Amino acid sequence: MDVFETLLELNPATHTIKVVDMHTSGEPTRIVVKGFPELEGTTLLEKRRCAREKHDRIRQSLMREPRGHGEMYGAILIAETELTRSGDADIGVLFCHNEGYSTMCGHATIALGRFLIDTHDLDIFPRRDTLQHDEETGLTMLRLHAPCGVVHVSVYTEDGHSDATRPVSFLGVPSFVTARDLEVEIPVAARWPRLRDAQRSCVKVDISYGGAFYALVSAEELGFPDGVRGPATLAEFDQATAALKRILSPQKELFKHPTEPDLEYLYSVMVVERRPTGELGLCFFADQQIDRSPTGSCVMARVALAVEQGRLEMGQGCDYESVVSVLNEGNGFRGTAVGLRPEGLVVKVEGRAFYTGAASFIVEEHDPLPTGFTIALPS
Ligand SMILES: O=C(O)[C@H]1NCC[C@@H]1O
Image (tube, rainbow, N blue to C red):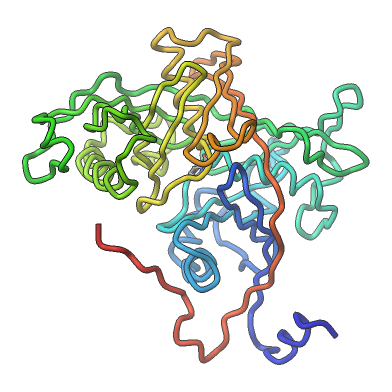
Protein backbone atom coordinates (compact mmCIF):
# COMPACT_ATOMS: atom_id res chain seq x y z
CA MET A 1 0.00 0.00 0.00
CA ASP A 2 1.50 3.36 -0.89
CA VAL A 3 1.64 6.37 1.36
CA PHE A 4 -1.43 8.00 -0.26
CA GLU A 5 -3.64 4.97 0.29
CA THR A 6 -2.44 4.65 3.88
CA LEU A 7 -3.26 8.28 4.54
CA LEU A 8 -6.75 7.97 3.10
CA GLU A 9 -7.34 4.70 4.89
CA LEU A 10 -6.44 6.31 8.20
CA ASN A 11 -9.07 8.95 7.54
CA PRO A 12 -11.95 7.07 5.90
CA ALA A 13 -14.51 9.77 6.65
CA THR A 14 -12.37 12.57 5.22
CA HIS A 15 -13.46 14.16 2.02
CA THR A 16 -10.76 13.99 -0.64
CA ILE A 17 -10.23 16.46 -3.48
CA LYS A 18 -8.04 15.32 -6.35
CA VAL A 19 -6.13 17.85 -8.38
CA VAL A 20 -3.67 18.00 -11.23
CA ASP A 21 -1.23 20.92 -11.11
CA MET A 22 0.20 22.66 -14.16
CA HIS A 23 1.92 25.92 -14.97
CA THR A 24 1.67 28.24 -17.95
CA SER A 25 4.65 30.60 -18.29
CA GLY A 26 5.16 30.05 -14.56
CA GLU A 27 1.56 30.79 -13.47
CA PRO A 28 0.02 27.82 -11.65
CA THR A 29 -3.30 26.15 -12.42
CA ARG A 30 -4.61 23.69 -9.87
CA ILE A 31 -7.19 21.69 -11.82
CA VAL A 32 -9.83 20.16 -9.55
CA VAL A 33 -10.68 16.87 -11.21
CA LYS A 34 -12.55 14.93 -8.51
CA GLY A 35 -14.28 15.52 -5.21
CA PHE A 36 -15.86 18.94 -5.76
CA PRO A 37 -19.53 18.75 -4.68
CA GLU A 38 -22.31 18.89 -7.27
CA LEU A 39 -23.22 22.56 -7.78
CA GLU A 40 -26.81 23.75 -7.83
CA GLY A 41 -28.04 25.79 -10.79
CA THR A 42 -28.99 25.34 -14.41
CA THR A 43 -26.47 27.73 -15.91
CA LEU A 44 -22.72 27.95 -15.38
CA LEU A 45 -23.12 31.42 -13.86
CA GLU A 46 -25.68 30.03 -11.38
CA LYS A 47 -23.20 27.27 -10.49
CA ARG A 48 -20.53 29.94 -10.03
CA ARG A 49 -22.81 31.70 -7.54
CA CYS A 50 -23.47 28.41 -5.74
CA ALA A 51 -19.71 27.69 -5.47
CA ARG A 52 -19.21 31.15 -3.97
CA GLU A 53 -22.14 31.01 -1.57
CA LYS A 54 -22.10 27.37 -0.44
CA HIS A 55 -18.67 25.83 -1.06
CA ASP A 56 -16.20 28.65 -0.74
CA ARG A 57 -14.39 26.76 2.05
CA ILE A 58 -13.12 24.31 -0.58
CA ARG A 59 -11.69 27.11 -2.73
CA GLN A 60 -10.07 28.62 0.34
CA SER A 61 -8.54 25.32 1.44
CA LEU A 62 -7.05 24.68 -2.01
CA MET A 63 -5.92 28.23 -2.83
CA ARG A 64 -4.44 29.25 0.53
CA GLU A 65 -1.68 27.95 2.77
CA PRO A 66 -0.87 25.26 3.79
CA ARG A 67 -2.32 23.35 0.79
CA GLY A 68 -1.85 26.23 -1.64
CA HIS A 69 -0.30 29.68 -1.39
CA GLY A 70 -1.31 33.31 -1.85
CA GLU A 71 -0.63 33.24 -5.60
CA MET A 72 -2.38 29.94 -6.41
CA TYR A 73 -4.96 29.77 -9.21
CA GLY A 74 -7.64 27.10 -9.69
CA ALA A 75 -9.87 25.58 -12.34
CA ILE A 76 -12.89 23.52 -11.29
CA LEU A 77 -14.17 21.27 -14.06
CA ILE A 78 -17.94 21.27 -14.53
CA ALA A 79 -19.01 18.35 -16.71
CA GLU A 80 -22.58 19.58 -17.37
CA THR A 81 -23.65 23.13 -18.19
CA GLU A 82 -26.49 24.63 -20.21
CA LEU A 83 -24.11 24.77 -23.21
CA THR A 84 -22.84 21.18 -22.96
CA ARG A 85 -26.49 20.11 -22.86
CA SER A 86 -27.37 22.16 -25.96
CA GLY A 87 -24.33 20.76 -27.82
CA ASP A 88 -22.49 24.13 -27.94
CA ALA A 89 -19.65 23.21 -25.57
CA ASP A 90 -17.74 20.07 -24.57
CA ILE A 91 -17.13 20.84 -20.91
CA GLY A 92 -17.48 23.74 -18.45
CA VAL A 93 -15.05 25.33 -16.03
CA LEU A 94 -15.04 27.72 -13.09
CA PHE A 95 -11.86 29.66 -12.41
CA CYS A 96 -10.80 30.67 -8.90
CA HIS A 97 -8.08 32.66 -7.13
CA ASN A 98 -7.20 34.27 -3.81
CA GLU A 99 -10.46 36.23 -3.58
CA GLY A 100 -13.18 34.29 -5.42
CA TYR A 101 -14.20 33.16 -8.89
CA SER A 102 -13.10 34.90 -12.08
CA THR A 103 -14.91 34.94 -15.40
CA MET A 104 -12.08 34.18 -17.83
CA CYS A 105 -8.56 32.92 -17.64
CA GLY A 106 -6.22 32.49 -20.58
CA HIS A 107 -3.32 30.80 -18.81
CA ALA A 108 -5.64 28.19 -17.26
CA THR A 109 -7.39 27.66 -20.62
CA ILE A 110 -3.99 26.84 -22.16
CA ALA A 111 -3.25 24.36 -19.35
CA LEU A 112 -6.73 22.85 -19.60
CA GLY A 113 -6.29 22.41 -23.34
CA ARG A 114 -3.49 19.91 -22.66
CA PHE A 115 -5.09 18.28 -19.63
CA LEU A 116 -8.47 17.69 -21.29
CA ILE A 117 -6.81 15.99 -24.26
CA ASP A 118 -4.63 13.86 -21.99
CA THR A 119 -7.37 12.69 -19.66
CA HIS A 120 -9.24 9.71 -21.01
CA ASP A 121 -11.24 9.29 -17.81
CA LEU A 122 -14.86 9.78 -18.85
CA ASP A 123 -15.88 10.43 -15.22
CA ILE A 124 -13.77 13.60 -15.43
CA PHE A 125 -14.58 14.53 -19.03
CA PRO A 126 -17.67 12.66 -20.23
CA ARG A 127 -17.55 14.13 -23.77
CA ARG A 128 -13.82 13.45 -24.30
CA ASP A 129 -14.55 10.91 -27.02
CA THR A 130 -16.65 13.28 -29.13
CA LEU A 131 -13.90 15.86 -29.71
CA GLN A 132 -13.10 16.69 -33.33
CA HIS A 133 -9.59 15.83 -34.48
CA ASP A 134 -8.17 17.14 -37.77
CA GLU A 135 -5.69 14.59 -39.13
CA GLU A 136 -4.20 17.08 -41.56
CA THR A 137 -3.24 19.74 -39.00
CA GLY A 138 -2.84 17.38 -36.05
CA LEU A 139 -5.13 19.63 -34.00
CA THR A 140 -7.92 18.52 -31.69
CA MET A 141 -10.63 21.12 -31.07
CA LEU A 142 -12.25 21.64 -27.71
CA ARG A 143 -15.10 23.99 -26.75
CA LEU A 144 -14.63 25.17 -23.20
CA HIS A 145 -17.58 26.84 -21.50
CA ALA A 146 -16.07 29.53 -19.27
CA PRO A 147 -18.24 31.95 -17.23
CA CYS A 148 -17.71 34.62 -19.94
CA GLY A 149 -18.82 32.28 -22.77
CA VAL A 150 -17.43 29.58 -25.07
CA VAL A 151 -13.70 29.56 -25.76
CA HIS A 152 -12.48 27.47 -28.72
CA VAL A 153 -9.25 25.68 -27.85
CA SER A 154 -6.92 23.92 -30.33
CA VAL A 155 -4.37 21.39 -29.12
CA TYR A 156 -1.71 19.53 -31.12
CA THR A 157 -2.42 15.87 -30.47
CA GLU A 158 -0.58 12.67 -31.24
CA ASP A 159 -1.92 9.21 -30.37
CA GLY A 160 -4.53 10.78 -28.10
CA HIS A 161 -2.03 12.87 -26.14
CA SER A 162 -1.10 16.53 -26.21
CA ASP A 163 2.26 17.58 -27.64
CA ALA A 164 4.20 19.45 -24.95
CA THR A 165 6.53 20.98 -27.52
CA ARG A 166 3.75 22.86 -29.36
CA PRO A 167 1.69 25.80 -28.13
CA VAL A 168 -1.98 25.49 -27.23
CA SER A 169 -4.12 28.21 -28.78
CA PHE A 170 -7.62 29.50 -28.15
CA LEU A 171 -10.10 31.89 -29.69
CA GLY A 172 -11.60 33.99 -26.94
CA VAL A 173 -15.03 35.58 -26.53
CA PRO A 174 -15.47 38.90 -28.38
CA SER A 175 -13.31 41.58 -26.78
CA PHE A 176 -14.01 45.31 -26.73
CA VAL A 177 -12.80 48.63 -25.38
CA THR A 178 -15.09 50.63 -23.09
CA ALA A 179 -12.90 53.68 -22.43
CA ARG A 180 -9.81 55.22 -24.01
CA ASP A 181 -7.46 57.80 -22.54
CA LEU A 182 -9.63 58.17 -19.49
CA GLU A 183 -8.21 60.83 -17.15
CA VAL A 184 -8.54 59.53 -13.60
CA GLU A 185 -8.17 62.10 -10.85
CA ILE A 186 -6.39 60.61 -7.84
CA PRO A 187 -7.54 62.19 -4.55
CA VAL A 188 -4.65 63.60 -2.49
CA ALA A 189 -5.01 60.99 0.26
CA ALA A 190 -4.84 58.13 -2.26
CA ARG A 191 -1.71 59.32 -4.10
CA TRP A 192 1.21 56.92 -3.95
CA PRO A 193 4.78 58.24 -3.36
CA ARG A 194 5.92 58.12 -7.02
CA LEU A 195 2.87 60.06 -8.16
CA ARG A 196 3.45 62.64 -5.45
CA ASP A 197 7.15 62.87 -6.39
CA ALA A 198 6.16 63.50 -10.01
CA GLN A 199 3.73 66.21 -8.75
CA ARG A 200 0.91 64.64 -10.69
CA SER A 201 -2.73 64.24 -9.74
CA CYS A 202 -4.12 62.46 -12.78
CA VAL A 203 -3.49 59.10 -14.44
CA LYS A 204 -4.52 58.17 -17.98
CA VAL A 205 -5.98 54.64 -18.39
CA ASP A 206 -7.79 52.52 -20.98
CA ILE A 207 -10.51 50.03 -20.05
CA SER A 208 -10.87 46.93 -22.15
CA TYR A 209 -12.74 43.63 -21.86
CA GLY A 210 -11.26 40.23 -22.68
CA GLY A 211 -13.71 37.95 -20.85
CA ALA A 212 -13.02 40.13 -17.79
CA PHE A 213 -12.55 43.88 -17.44
CA TYR A 214 -9.01 45.28 -17.33
CA ALA A 215 -7.71 48.76 -16.60
CA LEU A 216 -4.58 49.22 -18.74
CA VAL A 217 -2.06 51.79 -17.64
CA SER A 218 1.55 52.51 -18.55
CA ALA A 219 4.25 52.38 -15.88
CA GLU A 220 5.12 55.95 -16.82
CA GLU A 221 1.57 57.20 -16.14
CA LEU A 222 1.81 55.69 -12.64
CA GLY A 223 5.04 57.62 -12.05
CA PHE A 224 7.57 54.89 -12.91
CA PRO A 225 9.45 56.29 -15.94
CA ASP A 226 11.86 53.32 -16.02
CA GLY A 227 9.06 50.90 -16.85
CA VAL A 228 7.90 47.66 -15.31
CA ARG A 229 11.40 46.26 -14.88
CA GLY A 230 13.00 49.46 -13.64
CA PRO A 231 14.29 49.94 -10.09
CA ALA A 232 10.78 50.20 -8.59
CA THR A 233 9.74 47.34 -6.32
CA LEU A 234 6.68 45.15 -6.79
CA ALA A 235 5.39 46.60 -3.50
CA GLU A 236 5.35 50.08 -5.09
CA PHE A 237 3.41 48.85 -8.13
CA ASP A 238 1.07 46.97 -5.80
CA GLN A 239 0.29 50.15 -3.88
CA ALA A 240 -0.30 52.19 -7.05
CA THR A 241 -2.50 49.60 -8.81
CA ALA A 242 -4.51 48.87 -5.65
CA ALA A 243 -5.24 52.59 -5.26
CA LEU A 244 -6.27 52.87 -8.91
CA LYS A 245 -8.53 49.83 -8.63
CA ARG A 246 -10.24 51.26 -5.55
CA ILE A 247 -10.93 54.51 -7.42
CA LEU A 248 -12.10 52.89 -10.67
CA SER A 249 -14.19 50.00 -9.33
CA PRO A 250 -17.22 52.08 -8.25
CA GLN A 251 -17.44 53.67 -11.75
CA LYS A 252 -19.85 50.98 -12.97
CA GLU A 253 -20.49 52.64 -16.35
CA LEU A 254 -16.94 51.63 -17.38
CA PHE A 255 -17.65 47.93 -16.91
CA LYS A 256 -20.86 47.41 -18.88
CA HIS A 257 -21.32 44.00 -20.48
CA PRO A 258 -23.97 43.70 -23.21
CA THR A 259 -25.73 40.66 -21.70
CA GLU A 260 -24.35 39.51 -18.33
CA PRO A 261 -24.47 41.59 -15.13
CA ASP A 262 -22.30 38.96 -13.36
CA LEU A 263 -19.39 39.97 -15.62
CA GLU A 264 -19.63 43.70 -14.85
CA TYR A 265 -16.73 44.43 -12.52
CA LEU A 266 -13.08 45.47 -12.68
CA TYR A 267 -10.98 42.32 -12.35
CA SER A 268 -7.50 43.73 -12.71
CA VAL A 269 -5.17 46.64 -13.24
CA MET A 270 -2.43 45.74 -15.73
CA VAL A 271 0.72 47.85 -15.93
CA VAL A 272 1.87 47.84 -19.53
CA GLU A 273 5.22 48.67 -21.05
CA ARG A 274 5.45 48.84 -24.83
CA ARG A 275 8.69 47.44 -26.23
CA PRO A 276 10.04 47.27 -29.78
CA THR A 277 9.19 43.56 -29.98
CA GLY A 278 5.83 43.56 -28.21
CA GLU A 279 4.47 44.32 -24.76
CA LEU A 280 5.58 43.54 -21.22
CA GLY A 281 2.82 43.47 -18.61
CA LEU A 282 2.57 43.31 -14.85
CA CYS A 283 -0.91 42.16 -13.93
CA PHE A 284 -2.47 42.64 -10.51
CA PHE A 285 -5.77 40.76 -10.36
CA ALA A 286 -8.39 39.72 -7.80
CA ASP A 287 -7.01 40.65 -4.35
CA GLN A 288 -3.72 41.98 -5.81
CA GLN A 289 -2.49 38.58 -6.93
CA ILE A 290 0.36 38.94 -9.43
CA ASP A 291 0.08 36.95 -12.63
CA ARG A 292 3.30 35.13 -13.50
CA SER A 293 2.01 34.60 -17.05
CA PRO A 294 1.36 37.34 -19.63
CA THR A 295 -2.38 37.07 -18.76
CA GLY A 296 -4.25 35.49 -21.67
CA SER A 297 -7.55 37.28 -21.06
CA CYS A 298 -5.69 40.57 -20.90
CA VAL A 299 -3.93 39.69 -24.17
CA MET A 300 -7.46 39.63 -25.63
CA ALA A 301 -8.21 43.00 -24.04
CA ARG A 302 -4.88 44.51 -25.20
CA VAL A 303 -5.24 43.26 -28.78
CA ALA A 304 -8.74 44.83 -28.88
CA LEU A 305 -7.24 48.12 -27.70
CA ALA A 306 -4.31 47.94 -30.13
CA VAL A 307 -6.68 47.37 -33.07
CA GLU A 308 -8.88 50.26 -31.98
CA GLN A 309 -5.81 52.51 -31.67
CA GLY A 310 -4.60 51.44 -35.11
CA ARG A 311 -1.45 49.80 -33.71
CA LEU A 312 -2.48 46.32 -34.96
CA GLU A 313 -4.34 45.30 -38.07
CA MET A 314 -6.67 42.40 -38.58
CA GLY A 315 -4.59 39.24 -39.01
CA GLN A 316 -1.58 40.80 -37.27
CA GLY A 317 -0.10 39.40 -34.05
CA CYS A 318 2.00 40.70 -31.19
CA ASP A 319 4.18 39.07 -28.49
CA TYR A 320 3.17 39.52 -24.87
CA GLU A 321 5.51 38.91 -21.95
CA SER A 322 5.26 38.93 -18.17
CA VAL A 323 8.05 39.72 -15.73
CA VAL A 324 8.64 35.95 -15.51
CA SER A 325 8.23 34.91 -19.15
CA VAL A 326 10.55 37.66 -20.37
CA LEU A 327 13.43 35.83 -18.66
CA ASN A 328 13.03 32.74 -20.85
CA GLU A 329 12.75 33.04 -24.59
CA GLY A 330 9.62 31.47 -26.07
CA ASN A 331 7.81 31.41 -22.73
CA GLY A 332 5.39 34.27 -23.44
CA PHE A 333 2.03 34.47 -25.23
CA ARG A 334 1.17 35.59 -28.72
CA GLY A 335 -2.06 37.45 -29.43
CA THR A 336 -3.52 37.88 -32.90
CA ALA A 337 -6.59 39.78 -34.10
CA VAL A 338 -8.47 37.19 -36.15
CA GLY A 339 -12.03 38.39 -36.70
CA LEU A 340 -14.51 41.15 -36.09
CA ARG A 341 -18.02 40.37 -34.82
CA PRO A 342 -20.78 42.85 -33.91
CA GLU A 343 -20.08 42.09 -30.21
CA GLY A 344 -16.33 42.67 -30.48
CA LEU A 345 -12.99 41.43 -31.72
CA VAL A 346 -12.09 37.74 -31.79
CA VAL A 347 -8.51 37.26 -30.59
CA LYS A 348 -6.35 34.16 -30.87
CA VAL A 349 -4.02 33.58 -27.91
CA GLU A 350 -1.16 31.07 -27.94
CA GLY A 351 1.05 29.80 -25.12
CA ARG A 352 2.59 26.72 -23.55
CA ALA A 353 1.72 24.84 -20.36
CA PHE A 354 3.42 22.04 -18.45
CA TYR A 355 2.44 19.50 -15.78
CA THR A 356 3.97 19.96 -12.35
CA GLY A 357 2.24 17.24 -10.32
CA ALA A 358 -0.94 15.65 -8.99
CA ALA A 359 -2.26 15.48 -5.46
CA SER A 360 -5.08 14.35 -3.17
CA PHE A 361 -6.01 16.93 -0.57
CA ILE A 362 -7.86 16.28 2.66
CA VAL A 363 -9.01 18.35 5.60
CA GLU A 364 -9.06 16.32 8.79
CA GLU A 365 -11.99 16.65 11.15
CA HIS A 366 -10.03 18.32 13.95
CA ASP A 367 -7.82 20.52 11.79
CA PRO A 368 -8.02 24.01 13.33
CA LEU A 369 -7.19 25.59 9.94
CA PRO A 370 -9.70 23.91 7.61
CA THR A 371 -9.88 26.82 5.19
CA GLY A 372 -6.19 27.70 5.33
CA PHE A 373 -4.77 31.18 5.73
CA THR A 374 -2.74 33.87 4.02
CA ILE A 375 -0.06 36.10 5.47
CA ALA A 376 -0.11 39.68 4.25
CA LEU A 377 3.09 41.68 4.50
CA PRO A 378 2.54 45.34 5.38
CA SER A 379 3.02 47.46 2.26
O1 LIG B 1 -4.19 34.36 -18.17
C1 LIG B 1 -5.18 34.86 -17.63
O2 LIG B 1 -6.11 35.32 -18.28
C2 LIG B 1 -5.27 34.82 -16.12
N1 LIG B 1 -4.05 34.59 -15.41
C3 LIG B 1 -4.30 34.99 -14.02
C4 LIG B 1 -5.22 36.17 -14.18
C5 LIG B 1 -6.02 35.92 -15.44
O3 LIG B 1 -7.29 35.43 -15.09
